[in-house]
Image 1 (spheres, one colour):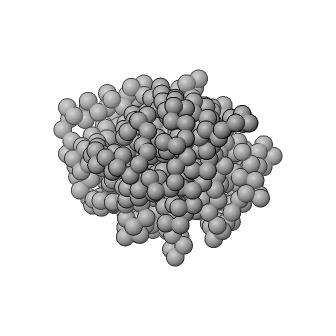
Image 2 (cartoon, rainbow, N blue to C red; image 1 turned 120 degrees about the vertical axis):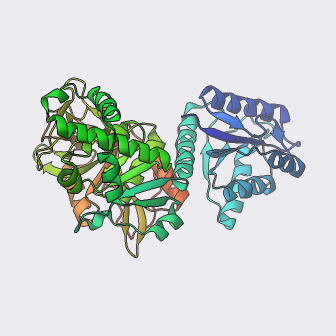
Image 3 (spheres, helix red, strand yellow; image 1 turned 180 degrees about the vertical axis):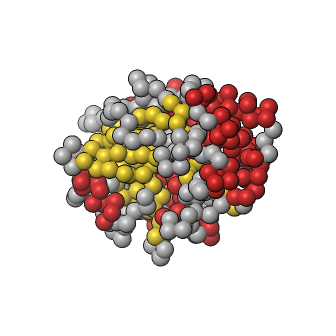
Length: 468
């Protein structure tokens, strides 16, 4: 994914314009070499209101993920405010960049930090959110924050345009999967598209044999043992895959929240899990039990990371071993499988019907996340971190043994003590800085399940600013 950054280099003619120009060019080169698509004035110094007006008048009508205001030299806050207001109106996150000054004993050539200080205060007075950098142009540390903020801005756009297909209603007693469409739209801009489950089941049942065989061959790429399973049931799952794939395309759906039981078993004689696993692998994240917020969290993780996510239950904690098991019936994306152990097609552990994918999750760094919601308290972003260990499957289906960044007992106490939902989402890699930037951009409090006790905050505490 190539992110788009608007770049403005602010300066004042009474300071060292030559040095300011050099710094602007260095910063621009750094962003370009890093793979960002840069729009706006670029390295051309913006030094008065007319230049700001011209830059905004020529603004391209295309999505933008982040606006960088480099204070190439001192300038008062007027130009920064004009640009910030225009960016804020479009929901584009703002980054103020100040550069250090060489202490030469002579002329103060740039005074960049003071210019950013003026801009920060002006934006704070107007309630316009921003972040800041204080690094030399070209410093690799600057790119880390740019990356987090650009990913956050991209995720904001994706969720604001997101359409989640809700296939049926969540099972009775699964209040963790409830949602409020009006509050969801106000907070994130996302839309839920309810689709009657009977319509989905009928479409799956009516998939022509040739299309069903094509889908079955597609699923067999990941599980070579499909011919060992009940042929009628695996063909049923292939029909479910074809129907859901067509539905997502026709209705422009970015993710699916599926009531996966009991109807797929009782009416179609097969499991939906294998079909949902394949769709998640193909960038249409799916959650079971019609968990709308779970699917939205999957979409968020996919937008932030560019990787395929997984929704799971926390099903076991071993205090002595300091590990836990994240599991689900068999809908993790196949790319998460441990290559040393492989993938097998299997049957649902409770229903005895295929098709599910069974494998152990591969070892590596993972980030946890969940859009947590309580009536009257609104949304909060829950995150966490840990290492997925190399281990044999703990249970049938898809499962992984994780060692959290904090003791497993402590994480369990937080999950249960705070009344969090039973579904947690995960993706490989360390993505908490970008998730924290997204939470700040959306005005959401954030809880880190694996923070130290001093840093951990309950839902009614103040918003924690993650150290980026």
